[in-house]
Image (cartoon, rainbow, N blue to C red; front, side, top):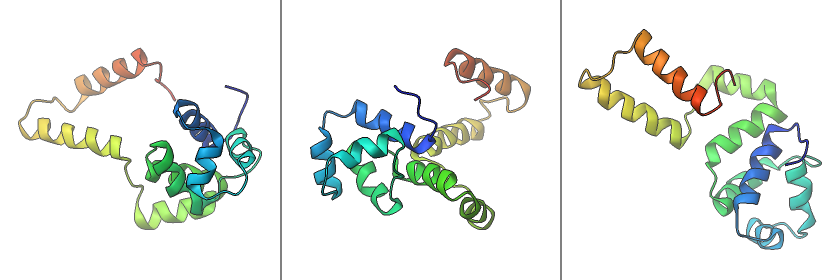
Length: 133
């Protein structure tokens, strides 16, 4: 991976690199006339058009809600702040799955929700190399 500072471009670059599709195939499926736009998007040279995020996400198997929120947060932080204040921050599909599992276990009183749970979660994040990020 190169030195990209755009969270949106980083997310897109990872999805493109994980895809078996060529940039031409991605461009065709998303509706871009020229394939080189895909390179420009994933390098952060050009912003990802918000109206193309659903098609890019579907083409590349990404969570489109998460992708859109990251792009809005980066490109339009004021708009993102208003959306979060008024509508709340939506959960991604993966986050919703984790919350659902947690709630099911908590309903059966299987989880100590105070300090032991927090310590266990921090330990898992540390193992994944994600603590503090």
